[in-house]
Length: 293
Image 1 (cartoon, rainbow, N blue to C red):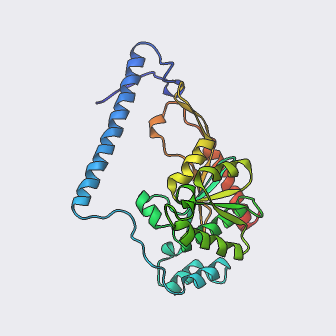
Image 2: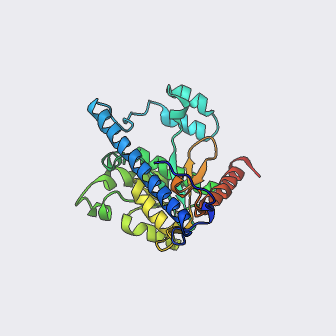
Image 3: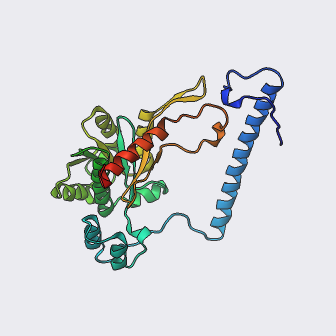
């Protein structure tokens, strides 16, 4: 379908206040074409993934064991006794692999950092290991310091409902999460948990904790976006899109908006710049902490 629109001020157009006549028809056709193209791309992606699986292509990154001496090299890097390149060389791995990072999300009332993000839920459960949980607790402590919290208070969420009810359904809390928390405490980090995932974010929002360590993507994303996003179904607009996305553990400062590209809103005058401004200001604050004002 090809649509030509003349004299149509898209940037001032709202779906509920469409112009009359030919302009209205043209805009509706354009929106319909955009929706069909989006669905076409999704179908093409589904077909491509299915064909790849038939050929034996596996998705996701396979888990690999850390080389001997990694923790020593990483601590030397963290204490600035070695550069990232030197430490990676000692471990026999690429520099890009050496940097151990995590996604930190922040809204005005909640901060969340994730043990895993873009993997299947089944794989996310397998990634809840003491070593990784401990690393993310450390990154939470460092990331919050960069955001201006001198002594951040960290809460750790459990993986299972009600933190497995003392092993009634699951043992990840006892075997992996609690040992990581105890070791972090011995390092002087202010951290508590594990807490039931259905209540820990309420405590963080109330100010009892500054950040929550979430075990997987949706466990952390859902409460943060409920807190930071406000959607009006009548105007089909997000009236508030508060929140940022940071990558903690990199040698550079990296912040971003906490939403997608939203190409479907292009030219319609309803994109919200709030998250972009939050990301810029956070990046400045993190740079000041790391490199001095």
